[in-house]
Image (cartoon, helix red, strand yellow):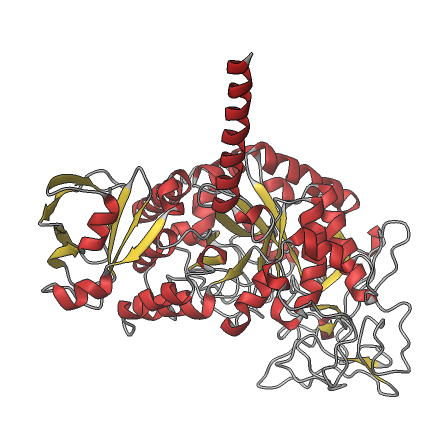
Length: 624
């Protein structure tokens, strides 16, 4: 009996210790982000472009001329291939119903005015109805929501989590919910339009002024040279609302987000916040405490509307959201909405577009975001290195600056807003993305994101209308050539890819799968680049090196960004790292984790390490 009692006591304390250690290792269960033991990879796909096999690409072409992809193009085979690429989450961009220049009136959908629509296919960030999906994407627009629900299920069956866009800062000028759940009232219906501002108005107004469409400059027009029947230079909006980017003009400029209106979150025109602010120290509290804080507070109407929208999609099976221009919305709103989402779905993946580094920690800690774009620091710096006018010396200080939030800073080299790597305006060659991708995907514990077509070197060169060359257009109906070659008439087997494109996709597949399968990349990081810059002959500012390790595995990552020159040097591993790795003097075999071809020796002498390295132009090694 005594032995049994001691056994129970031992099990109790062992369980308590395990729980304690687990909580220390994964504070994200409440405080920060979704719990994860391995890296995550997000595959952003522009939904209407993915399955389009039409190669016409007529500038300003209609949906009939240039074609469009559908939800059903994401077949079991297509999703399995995306998963096999090394993907954990798929971000379906452009799903909520936004303005389009296609006639769906026979389905009860009003036509959209080209004077306030960007391109024929419309901006996915001018949402017209948050409780339904883009009719372009459905085989049968009447059952478009059911078709998307089926896509969610297929994605889950393939082992992929589903992310969609939510755009809280602005909506389309002609917002109209056709399938609102019972009790849901459209934006602006109850607004007092005689006032510029009221805390519970959904919009800001210019009383007694009518909206006027922008003056088109430099030969631009809404739909190119072809005149649309509804294109008359007028749009009925009385009184005029403020524009999505914050313009207060009743006639916004052509460069403004003229197709959208800004949402009012209870911030007056002079900047006064008409809602409770978070108490001091609340950045250290978890989402459950934040949720409790807002339960008895007066909440502006717009807050409730967007919380209800996200609840609707979570209930449908969506696993997370990418928030457009999150920094333009008060951080207190994010605390309110994200804590509500986490209470409903703790593992929800919440990614935000925030470009001001001074706001990063507030939006993560107070706003309860899981992840932010690491755009203005890591992406911009790596881009300069890839273009040949930046130095790798600038990369380690970024990791040092962000070390307290490095897990929350999602890494990418392409997305729908950025230029394609292979475009002449960026790097001019998809191969220049290889060392950058190795660095981006392995330097931290953060998730990695790639944009569809990146893995086969898409160059975004099509001039299709409203969208700019170098970026695959998000405003036009377009076919994506390199991606279409991989799609191979919807066989999704890469059958039409060139040999170089096949090699590039193989590289991405090897790298991404390595990252999601390697717990070491959730372990420790240390820069060795700056040390080697001052201690190693022939080691220059086109090379980058760092180490990653955990209790079981040690990695040395070396990348050569130079597209013309090989490099050869004796890489040094400082003594403090060798001590942390608990290695004794001697020789240790090293093998490249991606291709398993390169092998060398880590030589440790008197506590310091060195390894002979020779890299071809644009070559990288992950030595294990």
